[in-house]
Length: 100
Image (cartoon, rainbow, N blue to C red; front, side):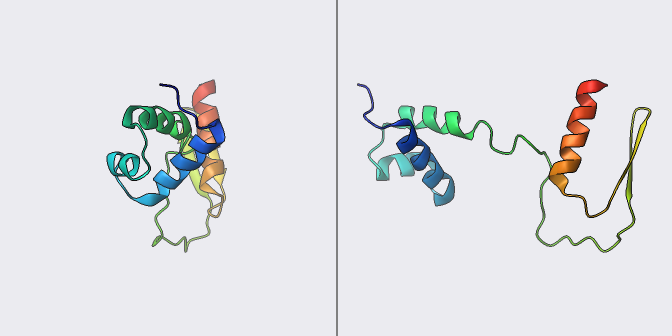
């Protein structure tokens, strides 16, 4: 049986599930969803979550030293400002890994 929900409706359901704190089975049951169909859509929309960075932001860590950070990858040396956003640092490292 084909689902009568639109792409956007599934996206909204997956968003609500991600925020709910419920297990997939509980959320499916509470929203009258076929579990296998919900698993499909959850994988579909959660594929790109956190792919831009492997860094974990810890709320209690505060940068107090504003000296630049020195990174060395193979023969490439980088100087990165201490307050540079982690997303930018992750992107730089990702690009370097592709080129090396």
